[in-house]
Length: 319
Length: 297
Image 1: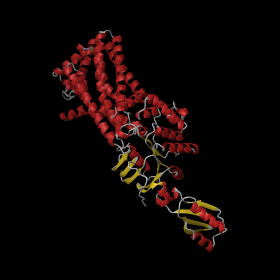
Image 2: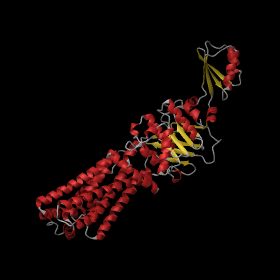
Image 3: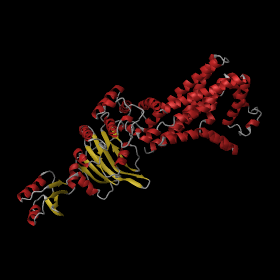
Image 4: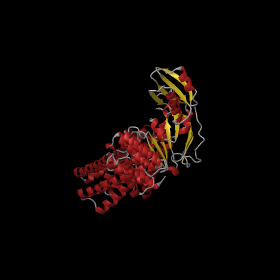
């Protein structure tokens, strides 16, 4: 399934990926991947393990060189183009900071490479570390940081200098809930002025955070578009559980509702309803009808999630 | 390439090298072995006497210079009646031992042999460690691969030059204070020349290490490569020449066949050798940068 995105993409996207292919020996990690990322929004890259997300990010960042295809960043040029240096940042996956230098020195160098004076760089680094709760570690070596703190440090460096395009490879992986929430808020704040491309296995988080989404599976783009387009593309389902099975009349009444496409009995009072429409209203209509029929569900699960769509698109992929 | 970035990366890489321990080992190794070798020579002068020592050094120098300039098969050189048949080599050795402070010449020629080994032990990890751990990834969207490569090279070259200046300064002071054979003015003038020569010699080897370090993902592999190739290359070339004379030209794969001309009495040859070292430096940097820009990180 492939959904072409035509809406809301601006004339000069923050990132344009065209037919990018990359192989490692016989393994094709990316196969003619194409999509565009509009400016000033949060874009989620979703895919199972081995889908090619990190490879894609590495190519965009210029760490890896694509076998074929084209990447245009900020309308300027390919990765490594002088016009984009300092305007793009990345939180790479599994990259370590130098254990032999203080955090301050490393981040000051990165900020100075992005064009700041030493004094400005020190101020910016202090502010960035404060945003991720690492102010106390300014003069320490990265060796003393836990995995989660190292992740936050990586995120802090990605924020330095307010880059126009920020690429975050699993930014909340390994973070406790409080810090994950803090990082999500920072990403939201940043998206006012910057474009943030983020990958995560936490699909609920991405659904909440992202304006656009690209679903990648085994190196192929399965779907791309705004979150609303993607959500609309999937068949919405809700699971209902009752103490006993519904009667034929009750089932027929539910089927007569415009929002209900089909009803499948799953046994032991459980039913799966396909729902046409977004938002709460279709589900509310079903519940009102059930109330009138005196059939109160004991459980309800709304399957209209990014996860459902993701699983339907990548169902047979290995996790 | 952005020269501001090159300068920033170079200046930050020097303390990074020192804190990593590699730089400390490099400095200690260079200074301890450099001074120890000088001490051995001074002790020989005290044991043998200046005249006998000079004669011994003259033979060694003749053999070394004739070998590295491919004047004949090493198996035949000792039969050339102390190289009497090699007038140019004889005059060269005479210059080093009679016109310049002989002891300092002996010490500095020895350093010219050792500096490439010191460099291979200290400059191997310019990029390899950061490539292995991914630390360069944090800098690569803020600067270009060229700036990163040249910045690391420049930092290591400056660090090496500072080490050489420290070493030669101590050597001149050591020789001048231990033996009352030479005027301080002569020692200092020859010391300055030899410091320049040793810095010229170090540059291509630092560049060679930059190249290896940029294409190998492990500091240990980089150390093995540089530590084996740099010292083994002249022995292989000279050994190959004994088997088939044209193979001796293999010595020019690295600066070994050029670097000793920096101690030649003819200023034109010194300039030629300095330019040769710079050419090797440029070649190794070009190769290193070429592969660094093409590779996946």
